[in-house]
Image 1 (tube, rainbow, N blue to C red):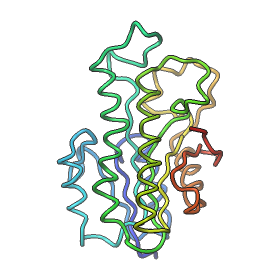
Image 2: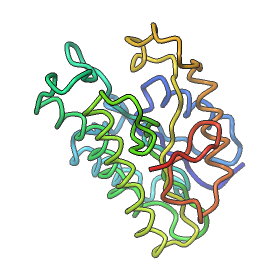
Image 3: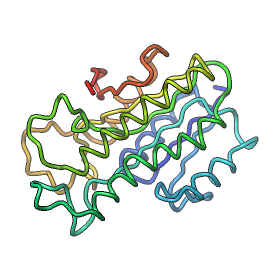
Image 4: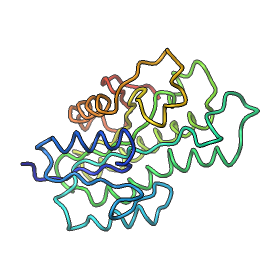
Length: 231
């Protein structure tokens, strides 16, 4: 049995639950901690107070945390969805995308990285998206979602640089899960261009990628198949 803990933030969602379930089967971890809005210690990705309280509740309670994954994200919320053109831009929706997709994960890093293991390998990951790549953008549209994921990728890079000064064995990365059969992707089932994965398949693929990463790869974004996603 392992001697460290893994934490999944957003463990009630499709991908988050699948990640937690997969980690439960991994003997590398003595404890898998599931955090979400309705967990024993609630965590709301849009509320820094709840993020800080959740992190504080884990201090000296569980084995040292060696893995933390932020599995939250916002793509649509009725009646709003990803914009198809400039005329659809709405300042509230833009800010909400940044609040959930970029600011929230950055605040999780702010409060959770300091309570993770101080020495030895640790990994902090957040779900990103290929559409957050500026150089890979050939279609346009989805303005707020794309921009918020690009912002998340910059946070990941910045945090990785800072944290390797504190723990040279740390890995901080973004993960693109692919198109997964969850509520987030449900409105876009009609697009045949994207191969679809079950949450369990996506979770297994992403964990295989994470467990194979080295500190020198910190600050980058990787797809579920291990390929590097350009900024």
